[in-house]
Image (tube, rainbow, N blue to C red; front, side, top):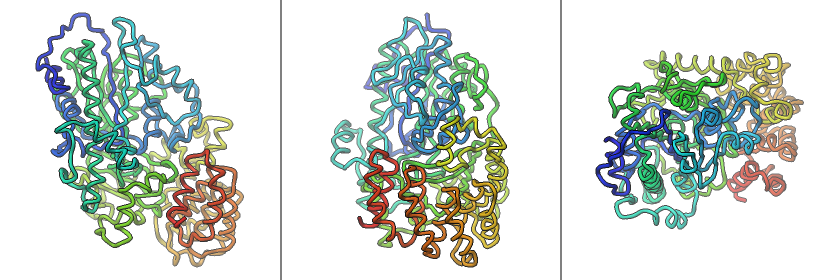
Length: 628
């Protein structure tokens, strides 16, 4: 049987396993194995001969391996909100990292529907779903949700859906932990032949290939090797419990690699994930991809996971699930395009909307004054690898390609994922790719409106809305949320020219506060020369009655012209009691010239926000980068 091949590798198991098929549940058991922060470029089954991932490789090589699987977000909590609800973050309002806004009561975690159909559902044990009322939400979704949870608590013969989340490849291990802790908690857990030394891999070309960088980057490979070992132990438990022949196994990562330019960044390195489905012999006929093993380039995103599992289990889908079932009785035709999104990660704001057809990935950067390596978390900034990159940049040691991630972005990226997997060559300015650019650009612009992207609202506004209703519901009211007018202002943001500057200055007087906000945000990317004739308008906009618009306009006025009124407005907002306003002000100042007037104020407020990790981290990053 084919599962014998899978487990011949795991823990040096016997080469032949002889399970009978009699008595298998008519509904398949379903096992999800999810890991943290991993891109397919670092997995052996995806062509990396340096990686030590034998158990993952077997799942992919003996099952169905997906080459075009994408996380809907680029940091854990937003990604997981789509995984568990099946609803996009920009519809649900869950795109900002650990924002925890309410969602409608009728939107359940999809394991709830499996439970209603008789499945035993377990989660071991990460939730981090980025929603309010998480305890009640989890209680409905899971029969058991703990570090001890697994299929072993079910009734005899009861089908199960079990999730196991492995943390060993998380950014804490690959970047943030002190090196000694990495040695004790990662390297020391690996045996002979399971580790990779500093010279045992090819360095991604957007990093300087130095001894110090190699010492840091080897952590990515060794942490993933430890994850693979944990997976082997889990599959051994499945075999021991005589369940391998009745269980369909899904394997995937929650988003891209936890390395600078990957996780939190709205390009393919942040979104693309390894993804495989392994079928035991009795369920291989459920695969629509022909004889197994197989490789497919069908597009799949995390929006598709909930409807796929329900379809596989024969459970009716609720109406709010818009993703594509790729398996089971409701399998739908493949998509031509996937839509992806990136918003605030930890303390670092951003707004990127992307589309991919599998070959090309287009990303629209609405805040391109923020570089790819934006400031997100003080522990990330304190990591060895980030200090090396920023230090090498300051010393002029990086090539133009390597330095690009620390500089302002263009408004658009277009990468050929097939021929440029490291996304080095931006084709947005290539005449021969203009048709592809236009097609994907138009798709992103259209999706902003058709999805009624509620994250076009500043996070401050979402907080006001959440006092009365769920953002998901609010966005459906066109009187309150005139999406076309807002999108018209937003889609200009990041485009640099005198013509767009004039248009955005005009919008500063709009009767719609969100239009004024996006006008001001867009002006932050314009040149000082193009703004020079509008200093009076910018100074006036620093007193806008809508706080997010005032903060953005003041940031533009101060950054370009050191305007005193703008400086004072920013200081006042730094002293606000509203976390979203403080965070917005600090984020603009992170990338602004002449930060000196704000250093003492940030020192003063840092203690006030000690209980808010997002704001306190932003304060610490700001102070550290300014020598305090």
